[in-house]
Each structure stands twice: as C-alpha cells, then as structure tokens.
Amino acid sequence: MNDPLKQFSFLDDDMIEKFDKFTEILIEENAKINLTGIKDAEGIRLKHFVDSLWAVDLIEKNAEIIDVGSGAGFPSLALAIAMPNTHILSVESTGKKVKFQQRIIDALSLSNATVINKRAEDIANSAQYRESFDIAVGRAVANLSVLAELLLPFVHVGGKMLAWKSIKAEDEISDAKKAIKILGGKIRIVKEYTLTGEEELIIIVIEKIKNTPAKYPREFKSIKSQPLC
Image (cartoon, rainbow, N blue to C red; front, side, top):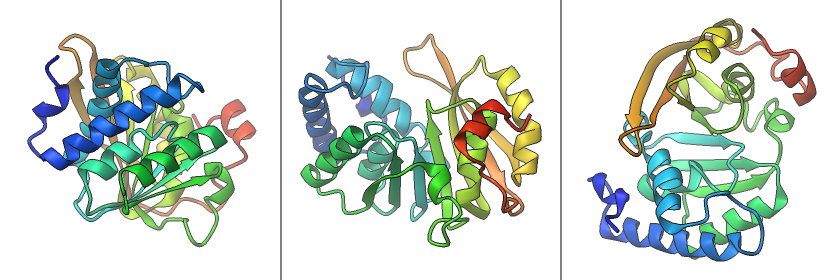
C-alpha cells in the first residue's frame, strides 16, 4: 500500500510513526467500541488523517486551536501530530471518544493537545474560552449555519474558523451567509482538494471580522430547530 500521508512534505519520520501508532490503536479500540465507521488502515489514513491535514497550510504555526465535536480526534489530534508548535483544545461530548482521545494523547506524548468532555454551547460563554482562540475547526459536525454558531464565538476578531464540506455544499454556503454575518464572520477562502482523485471536497475559511453578539451560541436545540439563515 502506498501511504497517502507521504504526499505531505511537512511530515517527518517521527510524525509518520505517530500516525502509524494512532492507526493501530484506533483499529484495536474500534473493534471494541464504535469510534468511527471507517475500520481499515488505508481508509483511516486517507479519510481521517489526510483529510484533516489538508488544513495545515491554512493554519499559522503557533496557533491556538479549538476543535468542536472532535469525535475520535479528527482533525484535532491529526493536526497536533503535524503541527507540534500549535496548541489544540479538543471538545467532545461523548465520553468514550474523550477517553479514546486521551489514550492517543498519552500514547503519542502529544503535549500540545488537550481533550475535554464538554458541549461547545455550554462553555462558549466562559471567559476562559470565549473569543480566545486563533482558529476554530469543525469536520463532519453539522450544516454550516449551525457550525458557525458553535465555532465563531470561540474565535477572537482577526481569527478564523475552518469547516470541512463536500464541494456540493453551494446551497449550504449560500443559506449560511446570513448566520455568518450575524455571528461576526465573513467567508474568505474556499479551498478545494480531493482525497481519491474523484470525490471533490472543500475547506471553508471564515474570518472573524467583529465580535459575536453575547446571546450566541444559543442552546443546541434552538440552534438546530431555528438556524440563523
């Protein structure tokens, strides 16, 4: 198997070894508890690791990053391996996934990554977290208007949020423009890439140009049932 991670010149041998160990542990744990629907090594490396790493050139080297709804650690722990000078806070509400992420952090000695068992909307108004990050990321979490309400409150003015989407998300992007404006953001870049040479994907970069109104984010049931669009 040709390792798809080898396409990234910024990954050194030590980083590749960490991804190898990450793959091994994820396959082992996924056989016991459902962490991801992708169960084979090649799929994990391509559809989780490589997909996450397409964001590296969109992130400053020393950035403070928050990943909301990080699941089994994507993109948070993949970015932590590839960008050791960043610090990443991984926020996940499912306890078994938090425990798994902590196992990876310990096994790979990822001193630049922290995982907490919280919901984003419950901590977004905390002085510790509100508008204190350079970058907020979300991958396979929710539609863009919902995701913007969850992510933008964490980003300081001048920072940005990154959202992973299919290239077919034009309507979703259009529908989310009102929400993004209300929340203090503006779409700056839509980066296109492909994993297999066939499926086209994008990362949407939204810059934070003004403070998010204090009433956002709302309770999640309101965000879902009455999106800002």
